[in-house]
Image (tube, rainbow, N blue to C red; front, top):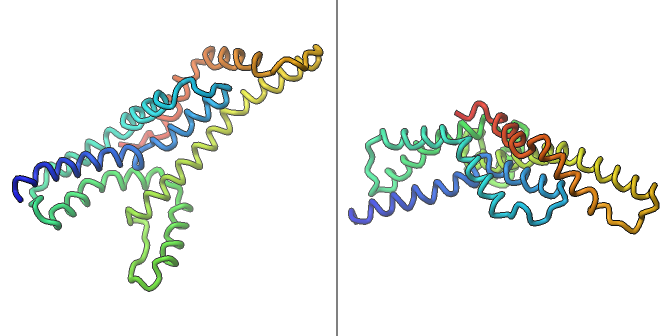
Length: 215
């Protein structure tokens, strides 16, 4: 059993890190915003999903690096027996605490209250009650908050590109070129505009700065 402790602890830590990147960081917001930008530009496969997910993943890790560091440091400072269930639970509670602080800082309170209310209804009779400190409440509330913010940002990003589409369509109709697909003309102009304003860099900068208190 002792020989299995190391591999089990490593597997637990590795699995937790992957799950943390996907659900406990800004990955959800970043990936959605990047995909909305691609759609707004009129591009279906460029950049590819792999590129966008990689960009979102590494940027999310960059934003939450202080959180990961605090979690690993906290776990490394405690002396626990990893061969017992209570020891593993203590690792979990210690390692997850910095992430819970990050979730609380970046979650809309209305979404937290919603899940607390729903949990108390769903869990009625089980002896369980929801609170703002419950990890199982914080995670879905955080993800809903991130999705909501991502769509708000996406809406604002979409507007200038829609304006270009409308302008190009109006010009083509005025010239009597109704048979020409507007996207053929609009897409190069949207790409030119996006490149001219250094769109990717400014977008990444704006998204990163929304998490100024991540550490």
